[in-house]
Length: 351
Length: 273
Image (cartoon, rainbow over all chains, first blue to last red; front, side, top):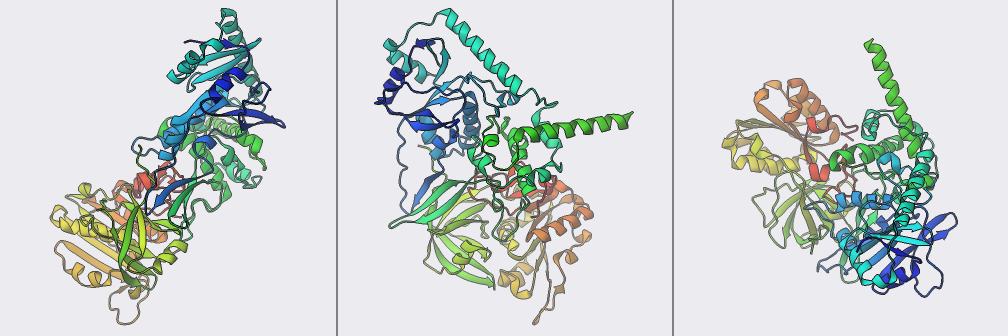
């Protein structure tokens, strides 16, 4: 079944919620939080205009989880199917990035894989990219082109549903009576709305032109003083890495229960002073400036070298969450300026 | 179902050996044979307390038992030092890439070690000695702070000195008692004439400051940066390149190392810290 039309979302979510838990966006203040959907509610579910505040990694790689039990191993609790509604293109790209790490051949993380396989992804277009969005700088678009089971686009009087996987097609097929056909003019309308959102993104980021691939700009800025300068306004709250949908540092710790021992896995942050410290006290990143430098190098240089993709989707969550004053866009812009200055100097010297 | 990378294998401490005032060796019996390559590391868990990475000091040919030499350096190693025979532990691994022993064939192997850095070196040494004819020579230059601080004293002062194809020199930073050997840091017993450098590889393991100065010396002697093998100590937690703590530039020390050539890592900042 190809693209379908539905005038209200509730019947669709109610149908999905019959077989699994569904998580949906809920507006809290100026942001969207994520809550379990309650089909008994009378109101139409909200379709978020931009990404939700919590990163999708929370569903696959919870803040804290049980990694292993011993001396008698216990099979991990089986994960039940669940659906997340309202994910955006940037969220889907973050999944692509996390998959590279946690589904790496020969080193699959069984905890991540178990959740990933059970997640039904119902994504949607961004109708109004936010002030901190810069996905277009990283090759992103304000609407998903892949990586979803079902994608929703708001149009006049309803929603277009596009399947992106066999599961998505199956879902539309199973509930075919809910849907209507899609007249061509609605597809044209979707294209126009998408173009408008893209234009808005271009407008928001007009000031952010980069003159070389980001990996090159950041690599050339490796020894820049900018990171030490930025460190003066960073308060080490670690919010940037916690809320980042691609940051995935974690630590393992051991616990003792009444009749077993357990290894737990918990989020960590490379901005924490002890992150790289060894037992003897040596610490290659004891200076905050070095930790900021590492964060940028990891995201744009090392990850690119290793997996061929940036470890950033331009969602801007780190900018919204920042309690200090480190803005990823400004760091990239300043590194770009330094990059150009070095080039100008070299050109002058060559004359 | 995917194998659980985080699941440790149950094991038991069957013997402890006091090596120096701050270093002990633990003979550990895993519940099933445990294979590793020399220079790879394991995560040793003290149940309920925590785990830490160690490179086994025993020969990889021994899979029923494994020896791990541990310096008291932090909380987990402090608690391990209080453990005796019969203590239940658990191990995960082996992880990373060890010493590429086959690539050393036909060459002089110049091994420089210090302090507890002799632990991984012991495993390598036992591996090399098993097939000593494959190498032009095995030349060891080992140092410790004082004579008491040497680990594996019995072998080091005895049997290892007499092995065919092996040349060994020891030094201490500070002599005491009846030490009649060399006194000075380990770089003072390095000599460019020790081996034919064009046809040699160097292996360095020890405290970071020692590794730094030894590497500088070896480069001065004319060793190619790609022929200097360093066993790097970083904060290795998961063991398979995911948790992020041990990153050294683009490398995960746990997965891509812990053995690197100096050439691989020299461009990154703070490698010795």
